[in-house]
Image (cartoon, rainbow, N blue to C red; front, side, top):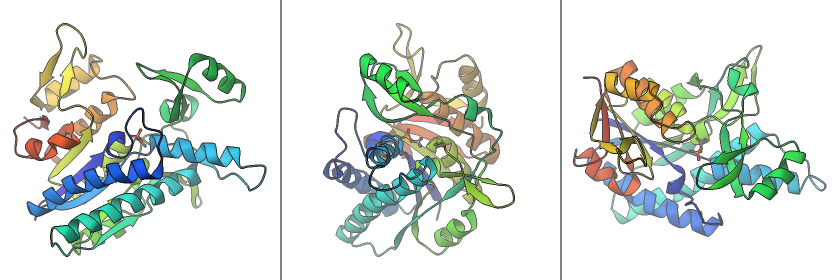
Length: 310
Ligand SMILES: NC(=O)OP(=O)(O)O
């Protein structure tokens, strides 16, 4: 049975413009779970990872808003909370869909810590968008609170936090044993809880990119395919320009060249293409970038962008 590692983008749980109620997110998780069950019906073992940008930002806001009554939790603990919340929604939706399909397979979410380097330059240059979008006037007010705000092109101003490079999942052996024993595992959610391992494990305030952490998960588990699901069907060069061109297949060499030429913006397609490059470099296997609704067609080679060794 081949192993498929799926990295779910933000729109799998929360679409731009939605408020982010529990009901909205659960409804999105149900649509996502239907797609994942299609992979399982095709005989794949599946490991799921997911983003948490909107959710971890919302949890952090809740901490700050309630801090006069109960102690606010640090950002790394908010990351852990987001794994529980999102894992719960995906896990419940998957169990319901598996039951409908008559498939008897266990599902479990693993609270996952991901090792980072305390000296990672990312700690001095926050880039990871979290939480809701704000107008320029609102962003100026947030600046006064000490938040770092950046413009998210076409959407508005948003809080940013450091996003160090993931080194490895601390719980990788536990995840491997679960996968080997036939459990559908949801792991490394929100890129994992960032931790350093000096004298002992310790959480650090950051949010890791889920695609880069997903690559670490997929490569370490020996996945056959690493599938990154986002809101576009294919990767494009010269995106939104007159000479925009969508790509069906990218060799490692082409992917590196386009990446270095700056075709893929940071905080958007950039980390997805970088995660795909690293996966193909490390394993020689295939990475696919496509949208959630085209995932099955992409697996069948009918659409999506495939990043291959040669
Ligand atoms: N952690 C992370 O990469 O989340 P998003 O994909 O939601 O930004």
